[in-house]
Length: 336
View 1 (cartoon, rainbow, N blue to C red):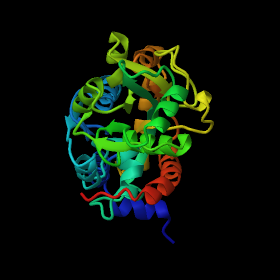
View 2: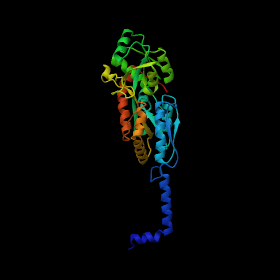
View 3: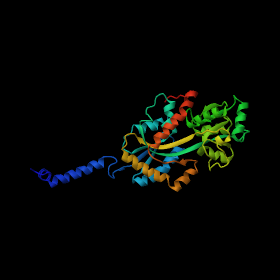
View 4: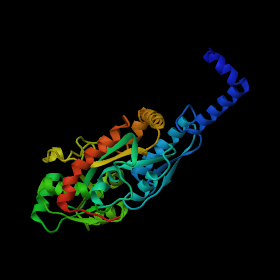
């Protein structure tokens, strides 16, 4: 009876074995995430907003060190429009090979699914999380000319003028709008929402007293706070900010439980191989854990919150649950 060894030797020559080894090597090279072949070309990091904002700054801060760690450049590509829908849909429909990354946020990964009756992508099924990136509270600001110095005084002022208080945001359904609606409920006051097409016109209207308040990203408002054109009344997070040491939280100003803000996460198309997801998570987590990176974003009022890949979907699910009732009760609906 022939042994397995004899069969092997009689049917497969040394030349054939060498060819098989070569073919296996090529196969491994062509399979994303196998061996040490990923990445073999530049990566693309899609930002669904215009250059210059908090999302864009965070993406560019990550892209350079991530490129060094991976041995391939990570190119930031801005795809603004449609309340982050355009960029999100582009990435959702991209090849799941690890070469297209997305700067997700509270809008694209959680709130949009509550605001729109139909989206071209599904935030719950079309993405795989890499890691949470950062979170930031908003700041409640008023024109310097408004005769109030804190949240309590603002509420008293608003109650005496139930039909005269307007609050600005950068568009219907965005986190700044939702923060204002949440404050109306917490404080028991009436305010009319006035949406603007971006932060710059909203802040211009606020400084010109066309509106009386705004819940804004600290990065945008702080220069005007420091110049004296705006007055900060309260921070929407659960703790104060080193950047605004004399500004209390709204919760500590008499409205316990009030909390709102923005957050960011890095994601890829859903079917991206687990090995690639793990590699990206490891590299980005290391980058965000560096003291220099933390110091850089402390200055932008962004708290870095890297962690396990599966935390992204859990975080988004909690946010959807948290905001769904408010959006439903206020009848906030948008169409793409």
